[in-house]
Image (cartoon, rainbow, N blue to C red; front, side):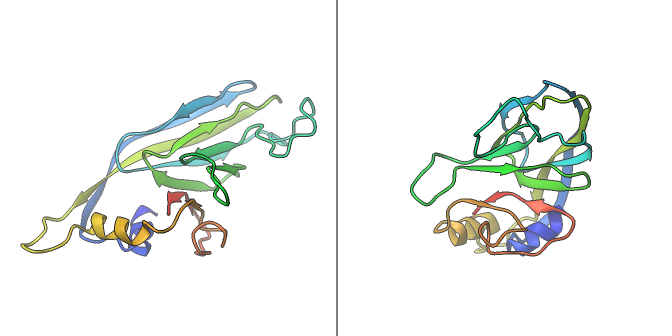
Length: 173
């Protein structure tokens, strides 16, 4: 959940986390979400239903990354030894949490069936700081500044190999 993620990231002084909005998206063959970002502080997407073999694309050959039905998280520009696009193949029951400003897109798929997901935006409300205290968001950003790329809790290549069974975190790191 979002509180566990923030605790792991050493974000402190959180008073509460508010759900700004929550919605369900139903998409069918050929439908997609163009590149966009969200409001709030954190956003997320979870998958409830997916067509079988959604990522199979017999019409496109010799493509290194198969984007059919997948989601891309986009960060900056491509640089030497730094990925700017992190492609995710959705799975039923998985949820991804990411900063609201992280650009992303859901690609169309070309088979019959329904992709059903839920999305949400969260607002983090911080406790008032006492005199002389340092804002925890500034501390966290300073600690992360030297690291580049995207983080996913499953992979040691993205964020240091944090283990997580129920959700994945895609974040600037």
